[in-house]
Amino acid sequence: MIKNIVFDLGGIIFKIDKNQAIKRFNEVGFAGAASYLDAFTQVGIFGELESGKITAEQFRCRLSELAGTELTLEDCAYGWQGYMAGLPQRNLDKLIELRQRGFRLSLLSNTNPFMMQWARSSAFDGRGHGLDHYLDALYLSYEMGVMKPEKRIFEMMLQGEKARPQETVFIDDSEHNTAVAAAMGIHVLQPDNGADWHGMLEDLITRCNNGAE
Image (cartoon, rainbow, N blue to C red; front, side, top):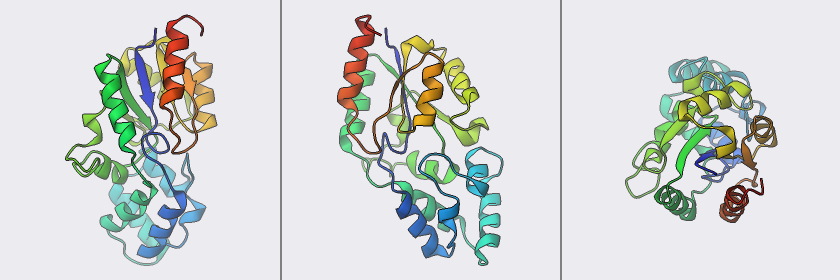
């Protein structure tokens, strides 16, 4: 019986556009973003930020050094938030519906303070609600000190949710992330970035609850 549904943020709840983020970093004065940014897991100081090894201010200082110009926290936020390329209302409506049906919903995301500055604000949905309004718990890589696809982050999420793998669905657009979750006995879905995953999820819930999986 499925009781818990765990979502990735970028690619699942909202559509991502790495090139738009790169363009924004170029606009504020850092031309090397393409070497650090990825659709799933960041590297260098970008990865250090998302794994909690450095703070937002430390990131700003080190990015300024790489850029050769003084960047502000606002510049950094502008660059990072370029990843967001569309937040379909249908996804927010689906989250509300799933909670009304009794599922516990949580987020498991490789992310950073600059993205969460927007996602947890009233600007998130354009209706005065942040991401927390739609979910029961948020498991964020920079707060947990570990990133997907490391097994430990999934173990920490399950422990935090007091959830059994066989009662849990994990939805993520990265094959590396879903492979680790599946190996732990978690049911997984891997839709493409920005795809409509609602039908896939309902089919999986039906199969699991009918004993087919």
